[in-house]
Amino acid sequence: MHRFTIILGVLAIFGLSSFYFYTRPGTLPADFLSGLQGNVKRGETVFHAAGCASCHTAPNAEPSTLPILQGAQSFSSPFGVFMAPNISPDPTYGIGDWSALDLANAMKLGTSPDGTHYYPAFPYTSYSRTTPQDVIDLHAFIQTLPADTTPSRPHDIKFPFNIRLSLGIWKLLFADADWITDASTVKQKRGRYLVEALGHCGECHTSRKRLGNLNHNLWLKGASNPSGEGTVPDITPSTLGWSEQDLAFYFETGFTPLYDSAGGHMAHVVQNLSRLTSNDREAIAAYLISLP
Amino acid sequence: MNRTFRIITITISLVLTGSVIHADGHIDAAIKARQAQMQLYAFNLGTLGSMAKGQAEYDATVATTAASNLAALSMLDQSLIWPKGSDSGSAKSNAKIEIWTNFPDIMNKGKAMADAALLMKAAAGGGLDSMRGAMGPLGASCGGCHKVYKETRN
Image (tube, rainbow over the protein chains, first blue to last red):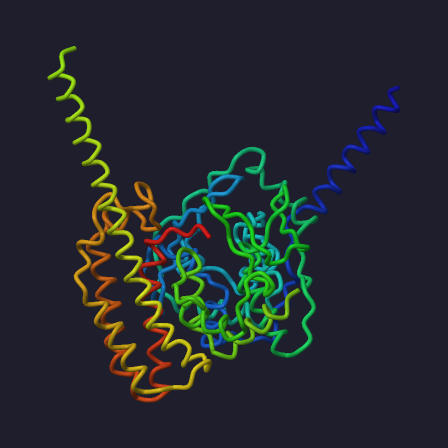
């Protein structure tokens, strides 16, 4: 009996430590970005393609080419309310003291510089597919934006989701950097990168399962609005019925084929997409048109 | 209950009902009127947009007509078609209540739209590229209001 207790104890310690081992916040190798140089101009494109300003500027901030990334927009969800933090280059209140590798760990693995898990409201489940070059370029661009000293506000998350350790299991199950669809042409591949990685379109346009993971079988086929009433539309070609040209024009101007103008959060997205090159907008359109 | 009292009560209730119907009718009519204005925007934007997309051949005269219409529409005094009580919370409308609580901002955004329409009016007759170039800023000025003040419930 005594021996049994000892065996049980050893097994428990082994179980807990392997649990911790497999669910601890991961980090990239120290040389992940070595040999790469950040480029501000390219980083600006990454910044707009990734839509950073849409969530990290103040609520109702006017569009700007030098946005103030002070945070403070809130996002309600079935798990609680998430607050976008200050990611301006202020070293104390923002991310000014982050290395490019810190940004890579955040975007690709959802791990903060102090080694905790981020909630996937920060869409690292999509940003995981970002290239190392794009991360280092984005890091260079963010450093050129105005610093701001607005303190980040804490999330308001319900139990048990407020236990960050549980995110380790969630990531193990649902976070990866694999492509969701096949792409054949160079243009479609660029479109896929912009949609599945930087643009993180699936985060709103794809429905989620019980644990908040995206249902890849219904990729971009629409979802309920996580933050309110109504739905986010199905943007696959058979349902949407827009031509490739209609899509590219919408990304540039916000005008639908019936010449209504994009509203709500999609107006933010159009604001970002309008700053990309027409080639990139056409690549996104080509990708969407190729979807089943 | 005597007869006079009954008649008075009925008269009062009819008058009250009537005024409620009148109020609702007034709100509905205002909402219809502004939807009609949006429809006119859409029609003229569509004329320009189909040329920009290459679905219709560029025609400088037609483009200028459409752009002039947009500019004229943006100059209308809209104060009568946005009465209080015609927001999404109180009527069948996608107009958020903030339109009435942030009124100076709406006026600024309306002015920005009118400016963009004037730029389009100047650009529309100057060739396809010139017209196309004014399309983005015009769209952005529409989005300026829709982003903040329009309910999205597709």
